[in-house]
Length: 99
Length: 479
Image (tube, rainbow over all chains, first blue to last red; front, side, top):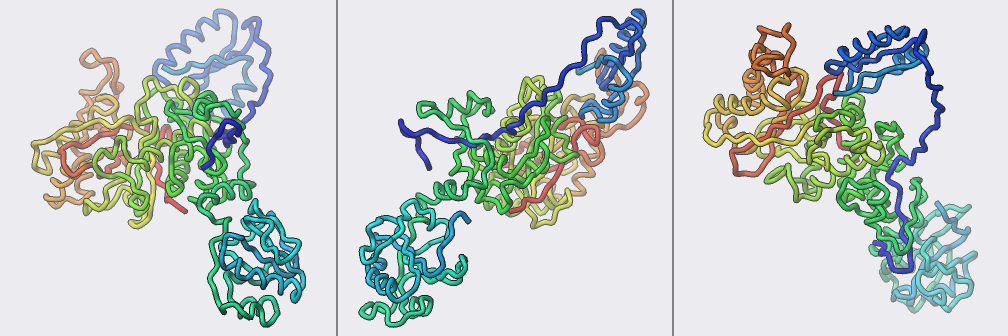
């Protein structure tokens, strides 16, 4: 096998995916929720519903409209259709994540 | 091919070969008698001094490209393609191929040649990398001459915490010799980045893990299984539970590559066990981008996430193998990848009856992942030889044992309801008054492995099972 000496360099093969991240501009942040539609996404972890119920109350009091969504399972990424639906129906989304 | 021979005759020689020295005058005869002779010398461009215009092939590019294994080799070339060749000195063959007569009149009729320098074992891997390395499309990472290779790989985040074997072109080309599949073949999409995972990328990570080329087909099969839709590697990574992919190997390949299905098989010490499991984890980390603190959210993890791979002991039991229960043919080499936690010890040194031992094992398996975590998880029992002997002595088949174990793994759901005994975890009240199985149907795997002495087996708890989580996946080991 090739040995490195003090004068030669070593060439290695990149074991990674070499992917360059795609740059996507973010949507502008809302300056107010009044009159806006906020999606509330539950990933079906325990008590996510409790959290989102409370968030929904408070957003309603602030004059926002809310739509509830849920992922079929927390164990897989959200289905593309669900992501598309949220993107078209809402101005912003709050997700109840994890434990 | 990266090299073309001119039409006519191409003869490969080296000075350090008694037969080549002997036929040097014959080359002079051929230069006169035959049309278009080109002589390639592997070691000394001044040899043979009997003719002019010798081609310097000391970098062995021509020799490697034309698969020269012996010197001298005579090749007849027509329209740029090899038509025929002969190796060593054989007057009849030389005269026939070159279309001449009375060559080397004072030489013996026949004399064997010597080894070509392009197949010298010390040079072969480097030559493969230099001339065959065009198959490798991965980005080259040049390390500075003063850089320590091991530190450089740590610095780039390629490591699981232990040192890596530097994946040089020569090592990766040698690793690719372990498979017949093309380097650019895509095996699957590696989450979370969902980029193509090619044979080449698997080979690079297998080199880093410390695998030998003959392990590569097993690594490839394990990656195929782990990247399958049903196994759900993304979920396995993203979960906060302490689980990772565990590889069980069945079939003739296990012995052929020297895997351990016996003493300490779930632990350290065997190169194949240790490095195959590690190669899979390095692919997950480096190709998929699944790293702790990033997409890998496991709260505590477990040592099996360095890699956990073992072979089932098939010879030591009359039972069919795990792979056979998963649908493989008995003589088919296969891997089963299971999403699981670390193995946990089950001690029972006193029970001698099959029925009693079944109940004892079941009692030790009920708490897997948590006593109130039922129905929704999978599990594996690794039955040791001394425990297996109790069932074989009683004449039980694998099916009988499995059915008996499943029966013992049922519980009264009233004991498992949330809130009972001040414990919040558990089943909703609606599940009260039922008999509930510990594992989902089809979610219990049983493998036989371990050393010859010790009345100790292991339970390996699983993760969220079925289509919402991960399903154990079995794949055939190819070539």
